[in-house]
Amino acid sequence: MFLSTILSILGLGAIVYVLFTLAVYALPFFVAMTVGLYVYESDAGVLAAIIAAFLSGAATLILGQIAFATVRSIPIRLAIGALYAIPAGLAGFHAIKELSEIGSAGENWSLAFGSIGALVIGVTAWVRVAALSGPEETPPTITTKRGETVRPTTNKVLCEAGDMPRGWETMRKAIDASRDS
Image 1 (cartoon, rainbow, N blue to C red):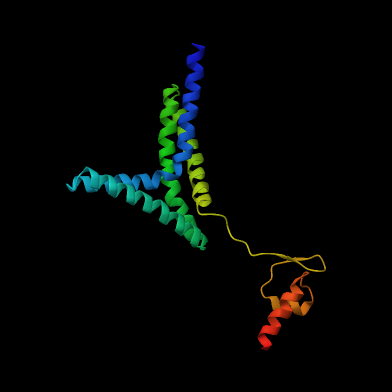
Image 2 (cartoon, one colour; image 1 turned 60 degrees about the vertical axis):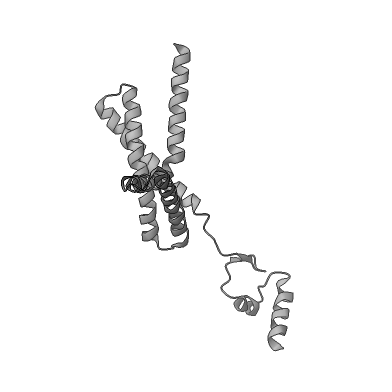
């Protein structure tokens, strides 16, 4: 009895781990299944359906990552993130709801657990989409002679203020010399 309880907890933990890990792939999986079934129903064959499903799912994931990484408009990034988070949230809702019903929770508790699961898994998918697109690039900072940290817009402004860090004077002189010749 004790061993079956431990194995059940480990099994449920593994299922929830897989759910969290694969949540970001809910939209590409949905697209892949839709395209694969469409190609199969058009009598193209099983191999063509599998290839079309794989290519469409991969294209959905890659294009979404590229779009999320390159677009800087916040509303568009929110929309792209929502495209990935909403299907993951729906999958999380149904998975957690069914897992709570296995544990013989009542209908209201199952809905509550499912709603919490949808929220948590949707946010997890959103964060993973953002992480897959790579880190935000920030401009370099320079510490001036006065100890201030600045983000230079042009080197000319720093040269005129005399705030160039050590070693940059030589570079500035070389650039000025190349302009004069």
